[in-house]
Length: 115
Image (cartoon, rainbow, N blue to C red; front, top):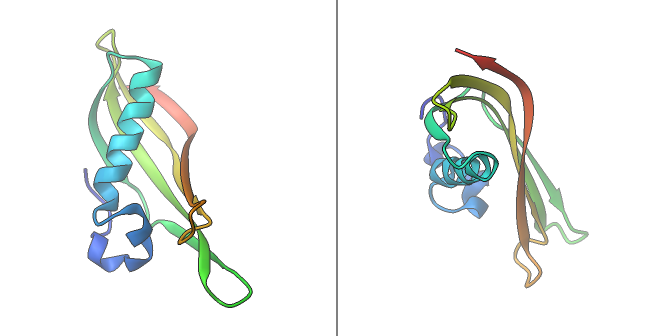
């Protein structure tokens, strides 16, 4: 895993936990395994600083965040073929600091190349 800014440099991502990179890698890996249980993640490269957006409620409290990461993901599929996936991983946090808080994530694939 490389190219990710250190968690200490992005205090805006504390809503994902103390180590956002580990959370992202875990969630991404689980999603790939749901598609192909034999997938092995060989490496993940963050290609640029994440795009961060926050929304505040009428009294100025942040209640929603979005964090998008442009990634290259190197995997080996269940048949042993190596791939380079390029895309964007996004986390969306809503109603943060409330009992209805939720965090969702999704992957937007731009390209998949056999390597």
